Image (cartoon, rainbow, N blue to C red; front, top):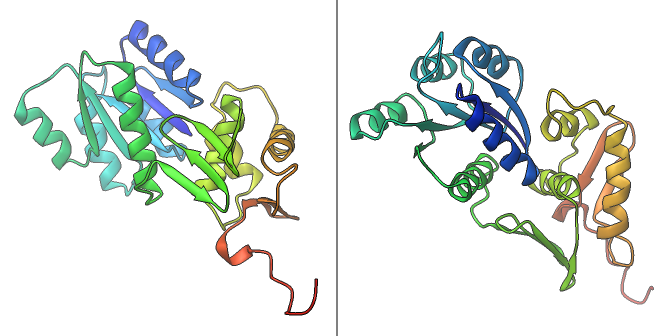
Length: 235
């Protein structure tokens, strides 16, 4: 999932970016309000992590502007402010969650996971697709009870497909949500990772869950794409 991290403290920004990337997030960074405004209004992020005390344009003004423009991306506010009034104002202006500094990275990660699930209207941390189970909290995957080891990039791709289960996602959609602005790979890398994922998720199992829609993209098999049972008496 792709995150915009808006934080003017460069040491903290570097630390958070590293922690998020180790969890498989693609992270873009903005250090002031103008940069954050440009990026948030030109890229479809899964979550924006927004500090309130920013140079040029403060976080609350940004939040108000984004909501007025119809940007519905979930926003997690980070701030050293801890008063009730500040929290209420941020939430009233359209923040989806609030985390007061200092905080532990694990709490930030848990809140991000919850916001990503909410954006896809998924409440349970466990996503089940036939005999495949994806634990979005622990980032573990099992099929037919067998644990499957995935790299962070492979897991991110599978989770993205799972959140869009039964719907085609294009290579462009995958690229925009799984790779940050500094990634030097080309969009062809998506096909490579689909192949890696198929070798781990589908090889030796039935039915195949990762489907190709030629000329369109890829999808994770939904109920409506279930393989049809043969008529009675046929095999």
